[in-house]
Length: 544
Image (cartoon, rainbow, N blue to C red; front, side, top):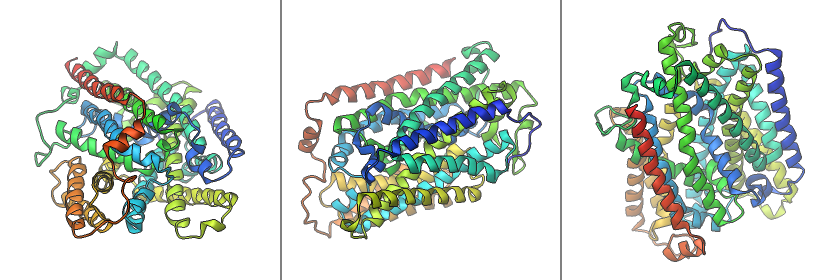
């Protein structure tokens, strides 16, 4: 756990700021709970939420504590790190285009709550249950890491024990999630995102002022960390995990899988009022994500320069395994530099970052448990709307307790929490995407083939992790995908699919029907241009 720091703990004014914020969240969720009638209101917000709010909620999940702590640590201190993380963002707009064209028209039309229901319609029950179970396992682990990372920050700032820190974060999040459902998740995420961005901008302005301007600050960064685009490696045995091609191609498959196949993301995209709004959610996310990532990477630049110019800073960090815990560099800087009251606001911002990840994931875990298991194996016609809503809330409590309990056991699993989460996800993201693409883009693929392909893709990635560590983990997303698709399709050739696939497999006609009269091609062009903008901005930063 965190070592005690020789600093003043937060004041009564700071605690008042935190208390007002948490009370406001509970009040909002209680108000929204009064309008809930059934599980659809609870899980997909009655499909009455606008695209901007949903998109900001998705962004808030991305700007989780793992990012706020991990990205600056990666830029400032991680071996092989630096501004290279920015080239990862080149894949985001391109992945949005793929999802908008090939995935969302089919998934939205089916009016799903659990995205894995599609797999039963297209393949069979075991494929649905397998993918849903994999999602639940991976996401609850990632959520536990999020709870762990923010709880050690709360422990550090407040002086509370780790147990008390977990309870402070978890109880409030679970309560407002249980009461308000997905609508509370979305609205609270919007408020949390505004607060978080405001605090990050304030911190960046402080750092820029400390070092006489942005250009001077960036130029003071060690030269090896100023590189934003690295064409000098391929990640296939050269030990360069963060070279251009693995980050672009691996990132593309990771993001398509995450935004297009992961319940925690797709569930909110399905909250949109109509097909066009669901597309707008992806468009807005594809455009706004890079500025947010750039913001916390520049904070990392400032922290690196500050640590270099302040010899006492790194020794003040809590240690882990005898080494400074770089994930805590940002909160330690804030504690040391910010005045009373603003520290409380910063703690609220860190709460917001954690809650925006925790709330949506717990709700989506509840949704998959309810839709893929509980309702699927029960005679749901005997259930009233009120009973379904009650069970949905109880499942949310269950997953909240599981995630909070697991946070005591995840510990320090990587040099930065950001790399840890992405690395674990890369084991299975490619194979999961492969299963969905077998369903959406082929007519011959069958459930047995899809499941076997998924297992083989995962096993290949596991072998690479254990026995070929010189291959970049980013490539796992690509290799896992192709192994799943190739072997899944070959195994399926011996099967025959007799179901009607007209609404379950992508076709140009189905795409055009979903598109209607909307000029989506202009949106695709905008996202493509935005990829070029990201490339230009990244190159410009490396030349400063």
